[in-house]
Length: 393
Image (tube, rainbow, N blue to C red; front, side, top):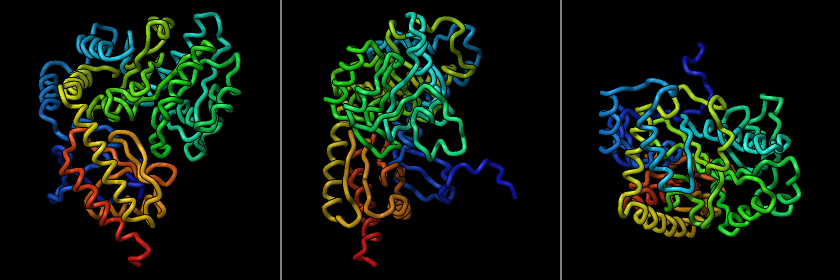
């Protein structure tokens, strides 16, 4: 019998019907501690009262008109994002992949209107993940996502992660920009060093190309700053944002300087549903929560606590855990066993985690996490590791 839903996911045999804070619940009432947050999406936790009110209030007014009309909710959210960031302008869409598509189009268009249409190549990095469209899987360059979808889209040149010599060699008169995640998510929670991010900004300035940041996973408070690039004290020219900005409601955005966006005039890009009244109402509510006094300070405190407890966990289970790495509440456990085995063992302990590349298990809890919940999660991981230890066999 054909599956009613296209079987493109290896789904766990558990379903959730309700969420509250950092927990989700099955129909039978079993509670799971959510340290995946829908892959860094539910930034404010499940059923946050402020987000629920924003959505339900808007749902009683208007859901959709069209981007051919004025959109007050978009204006409000865009102005707030501009106040909080480097950006002068914002394009709203529905997902990270769409935000990256806009980023690539904007970079190419920038050079086109400057009289250099040949500058259409984007440099990306091994291990990157930028989405599932034909363009973004080509940008990411990972064979497991490209297999069966040939031909690969042109316009992307990939270099090894952290290889400065290879990067400089890859820059040619056809280069439009450099696209990078401040912390690789799907690639295995591999952070870019602060100095390397500064060097990328300097390199782009020297060659007259654009710095393009994929902050789909790292953005909206995930690393303890509103956006991860702030740790390096630099700004990009264009930045893709999604996931946490909607708190669970589909929302993406492409932020840019006025200079980088000058080619994106009427008719050059669009979206039917992007920035609809429901999405932007929730997005504004998310920013109100995340930018409230003390919120990001608590994220930093919980991140430090989690890092310390994971270091102790590694010391306790050296036969299971090879390395702990990451930034803020975006942590990864590189495993000596199969990462999917640790993920499954954690699920048995009613802890949700996310697998990633490089044999890593990701921990991406809602940003509202408490010290008690951090401790509870690490206790569950400890029990999971005990089950997987060769000594327990």
